[in-house]
Image (cartoon, rainbow over all chains, first blue to last red; front, side):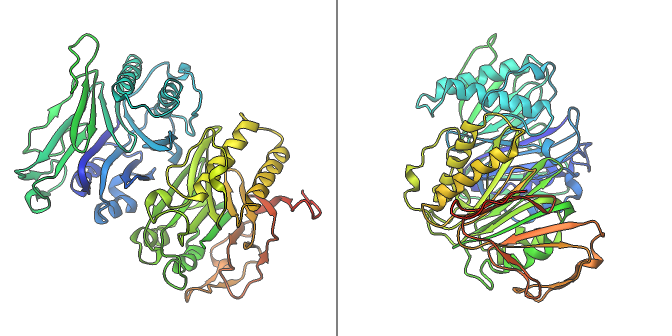
Length: 267
Length: 267
């Protein structure tokens, strides 16, 4: 299995602290040796860094720790391969342009019968179930919404129902972003935390690093982090429910969708 | 104006030598301070590194020099902005997926009336004439060739005629790649050199660096470099003609198309 890390913030924020713990799981404290990647949205632009080598020994990963890139939305992934060889083409996150926006996607889990998901606009470059599912999901969205919609709720409900369809094929934990919103969908494992004033200290579980966020923030900052497993051992992370989709904007949850057999609450 | 750098090779080759000279032009020996980017094709995969800051001071650019990424095809660009702000979204190279292949594009020049070029499948994320022209070009190709074609000549002739159309709108020097082929199209300025056995020494024009390629190659290696201006001062570079398209594969020119008023020669 792979691990996911995401961030949504209301001010451009670097992810160096969380990423330092996270990348140690890539061949350090964890078994995820088969590549890693991280994507940043900055001022309407997008870039990602991907490497098919263990993150703990990657000079590119070290650069990301040392060179703070400030971003509203971040998606990162470390890989333990199941479907698809260890190559650059199979390294998350994946990206496609829709509506003139760069969409970014990372998946944790494994699907059965994914080859039968029909593709339309988008086709995979590599050979993973993850990228095939991404191309299917984006194609389905594009067929239903050829242009951007004002009615976000309708779009988000569609994202949720497509995720539910993928969850029915196996394990599908997802981070997805379009540059404005971060979507996090839980099949088995995802946890989140929102940090805002009054800021306190946080201690990484996977590295001997303690940070006092009060020294690095202003009172208006809101920064939320989502990860497969909590990254700190002295804070209260909230575990997501199976079938739950959260839509994040500026560090806040702006919509929540639950599995059909649970109560749907959205704000 | 911007500057372009491309490479096609028959063995995975790093571009550290050429890139060292090239990036010095990004705010060092040249005026191209408005960002830079470099894209690599590796084993069917694709990745790019882009930074909206001067390359000569970019820690990411330094990493690319120090961390040799071996690739068959490379496309790089340093930017002196004319159309579009200095932002990540406006930083070349641009990429879009077609036929399950990552296509990569970088442009040097400036176009008039580009806003009228009709878009279909692909839409720009940023605000440059360059990315708009890329989206138009890819959309036109996709409409004519919804699937990959065996008849490469027909595809390449179409690429050439689309480039000619763009050249009619201003200055359009192009590097384009699909992971198999590198396309270089000259409107005003592009030069190339092919290095193969017996390898000799090369001396960078923009930095005090001398390399003896014989020490870094095998007798079968063929490595071609294409750049806006020759990067070395002791080798014979070939300048391309206005309206000339070269298609490169494994370091070799496999097809050549000239402007309609010149003799068309292809192999």
